[in-house]
Image (cartoon, rainbow, N blue to C red; front, side, top):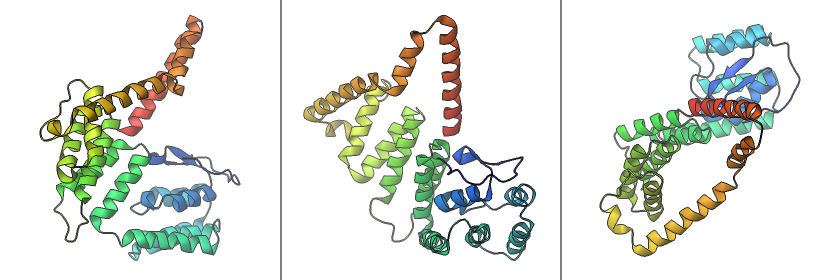
Length: 270
């Protein structure tokens, strides 16, 4: 996620948006975040903390007071967002109308469909812990009338991908297993087979085991080996190899910096 450079306002204490892992320093950046991340801001984004930032750091007392008044009157959150876009005058009317239409389309989704979109959005941000929680809540809820065919299977599959990204391979295998029972999709079977190659403790259960023919296993094994070869030339691997070519002091400093970066990224994921 990147924020376009724009006029710097006299902000001493920037507003931190945790899911995006960024600080914003201006009203323009605030509008940019709102406009490009409707699934992030539609629920509880405009709160006392944001209003205080608008009043005290952006020096926009009128906008802050207007938002407080609208909240007290029970105005919907999407209308608060539109007020911010309008008062900050960063996006023209046509763009504001486009945002309004996108929000209206999201609000027409069923609760389960909206939740899945939110989970997919969090997955895209590498917020895997949050995505897993959203997918889990969908699966725990009763199925909605008129639910699209294969919807539950898609949620199970996405949950499996999420757990795999967090290296929780047993949970990933279980989620993929449920997804396969729902859909009998060979692509899901393939992901389950790959898990057995990544984690020796993962085993295929029936009916998945019987569905993996020798021909499929051979093709997937070749794909695994090709992926391993490509991984050897990846940027991360080359960065690590480059560390070992440096003198001991620079190597330790570089390794410490790299591990710290990995830890920060992983904390963000869970």
